[in-house]
Length: 337
Ligand code: AHG
Ligand code: MN
Ligand code: MN
Image (cartoon, rainbow, N blue to C red):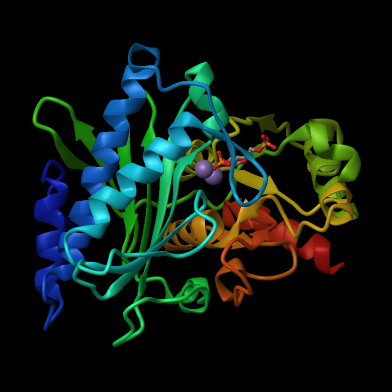
């Protein structure tokens, strides 16, 4: 147990001390990431004052419209990570290929994948957005890692986290020993440890799904949601509540705070257009699944555990069903029935 009120920097130095032979590089990398998150937090707060809202007039590799802030936050991450010798390469939702460092930069021992601005459609309407990141070991002695080097099972993540830019800016981190939350204190400019050993309640009466896709869902998801919506009068015998922020970071944060189930399942519309899901395995599903599992929750596609999947490509999409254990277990069992 740590003392509530210590800074993220103190926390990661303490964590480093627990590991024999730790070089300090991982600590320094987490520090770089926290600096990027602070910059993004500050930008999100300025909004229209500095002309950063609206479309960038471009599309990413997945054909999605890029917002100005998708492009800006991607740059913030690259700048924060490429100059200090802690990463070997980067991969982002907003970049077509692996980002290899300029030739003159020192290569470090880690790979980082990130969704620099999650929920970016919420930026223009002033609703919570976030950043998601995942850290992997880099292959040894390789100057320019390839997509294949990033395509590792989620179980191989060294650490994962997100930063939520809401009423407060909160950085949530796991290094595989539980989940810790840090709140940005704007006066001191430091992330302060505010919660540790976060545990998701196993039961919940709150679900999050985009209901506008209902007619496209597969039978197991139809069944689960129909039972929730039937409430007290249905087979579950209890009323459920619903939330949909459309920022995965905000949904996961709510679930870590008070429980719940989040679903972006496979549907027939996706299948028709050759998509395997909506959310991205390397930038969204894997880091969030690690956090959820570390907090005692569960995360599956419906058919398998997300962290066990062997990625086939950098921008692979995947169905996601995560949150309170007993509810996710139930949806999973409906897929097997
Ligand atoms: P991004 O802004 O990084 O593209 O991610 C948006 C994702 C996720 O955060 C959210 O849960 C989902 O897309 C919302 O999708 P709909 O707009 O279909 O509801
Ligand atoms: Mn996203
Ligand atoms: Mn994004």
